[in-house]
Image 1: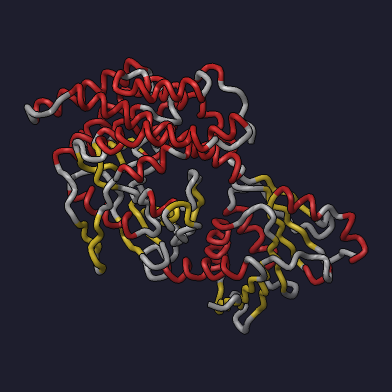
Image 2: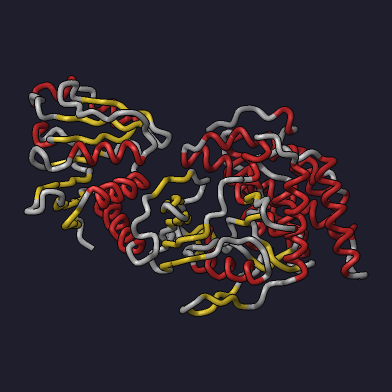
Length: 508
């Protein structure tokens, strides 16, 4: 797809739609250059973009002030009008500062001559024979070539759905590369998922990248397949209204905004939410996954198995990222070998015990409260594209040792007992002691992984907000390691990591 994209017959509605979709992909440091004669609609487009970013109030033309700054929930946008700019004044304008803070939108960019970054998006606007219609040509330079191609593909996808005329509202995501937006029509809404296929990344072991070793989804096919299977089992995964597997675009049912974490913050008791969430996992236990899951119009999808190598690779994030952040050096080979030797037999046993659905990220950021539904269907499930066949205890750990919420130990124990009682009533062969031992093992594995992931997000990706959750995760880890079945492992952790209450700042 070329770096240029022409749009003919653009009226005010289509101009606003374009602004709402462009707003989804803007980043700090972006430059948008608006070209065109007086009356072409440059300021109209600027107003639409500020509004779609969530800015409030009037958006005047900045002709005399040259620059107007808007703080929006997404980012800072600086709107510039260079019509009266003298090129010699550009250095004193503070454009570099504005780029460091957010996105810069420039009218009359030609007045800056060669003073603009080469990495930018140009939007040329011109009048047509129809007074209310405009012709637009969007041209991407540098990194904007691929980004413009993605924006065009997104627009063409939406144009083939019932939400072609729906403006988009950005929704805050989590640590993944996926992004979300709400599609809003007068009588209904939906959710747009933008999940470009992910490259495998560099090999880290046996010629395989991390995503392949731990069986992470690299496209949206697993999401579509698992969503359908969960809905067939009566659970509240979102319905899928349209999808493009190759591009990674989906239009989903809007399950609203009552995310578990925000509901707890508003005062809703954890027990009111977590009880039905446990019931949903019991529903999954009673309706185990098929060998293959159907995908409309495509080949079936086979769920991978959560093998010991995958679990060990995840747990090793602790020694790859968290331990070095504590000690300011890489872990010596002997200590790594001891870590692996202690973990492997535990995980080999876990990988073949009490198998069923593992949704993998079954915790508060991915669960929606649906009070108008009944029983386990009151729990909306959002994130399951990395689902596997594995030990059922894993999702109980994800839920009851939530990395982002403090789950009181008494509530955790009570809900774990409730789950075990229901399983025991279903089968006389179920052992609560075995399940609790497996729960502790997988809790230690998952919390080791999360400590490594949070350290990696902070150091590699600059996402330091996750560091605030590390003490909580460390406390869960200590709780798991207290189980008698993990005595050998507990000794290694006691030697290599400080107590959760004594964690020093990480060297990141």
